Image (cartoon, rainbow, N blue to C red; front, side, top):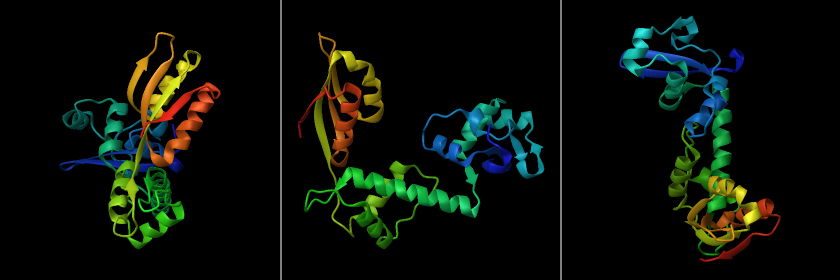
Length: 230
């Protein structure tokens, strides 16, 4: 459970009723982005409030009428995902800058300049984003922000999302790492061979090919086989 001095208020409104919880802003942001997290570790207090600043708790009747449950963890997760985080000015600034860096890094990984067929350097992307006046909402997911940013960048710089399909083969002795492969990359087709090896077609942004190759080398000690299909 996070300490109170680091917590912020997450607020959910339903009609005239207000429900608040005290949460770690970083942990809450991870949950909002779809990551799995332990709600108990994100909460600063195991309570649902009607007014957190006054320590006024929400009644069980109100909780049941709005959420159909009085379970704190279940309600807290919904408040985090559907409500609003009340960040301080400094917290909002830091989170906005963090999201901006993540967006720039992601665009550099997944896009190329179609005129040169090479990736745009992060600095070029950042300059173009400033020129396009791209707004970063600290509460939106990186994927959503990237989509918005690329749309805004198209009139400023030549940019194209290019994906590569790579055929891979993982020897039988290393197939215990297949789960990690699926967790980190998009596996389009897969097939288990009679000898226990695993073959698959993996689709990655062109800028992340080296990341895939590095990952495969690390989990198979360099014994994975790869072939760029297109």
